Image 1 (spheres, rainbow, N blue to C red):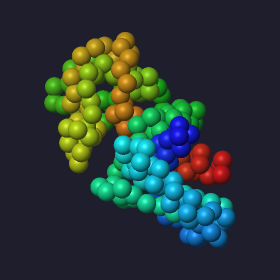
Image 2 (image 1 turned 120 degrees about the vertical axis):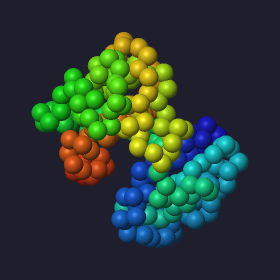
Image 3 (image 1 turned 90 degrees about the vertical axis):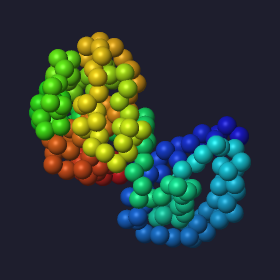
Length: 206
């Protein structure tokens, strides 16, 4: 059952990102694309039995969407935290901009979002660089805006955190650092992260 579980987790992680793309694809039936509907149903049943939670899935075959579904309260249009799945693609976007000469890894984060900085920023916050976001050395003990205010301004919430340690000196896994990188990419390009990656990465590799 381990391979099934691994596959389920992968599909759950990919589903939110794939859903937008799947919506653009031609739709077909499982049987028309050589997949028995019974196999999909059996897989869904296995997910229900073996996993604590699956948020959603999209199955694409021969470039056509043949099945998709979501477990309440999740839906295709709900903002979804993808955690580590997001990090590779977001850092790739940062790397592309750095190669283009449009971004410097040593730029200070406060200089990029002057309207989001607290009224009395700490010295450590002023030293925080893009490089520190990439390496998750922000110096912040807790940054999760999804728990603090899911519908709030996540950039401002991030910058309002205490920067307890000198940035660049202490590693702490931090998904919000990745969110900040996406905000930086969007500020630098004037485009949504996924639109930029679509042009520079996803469409070129098919």
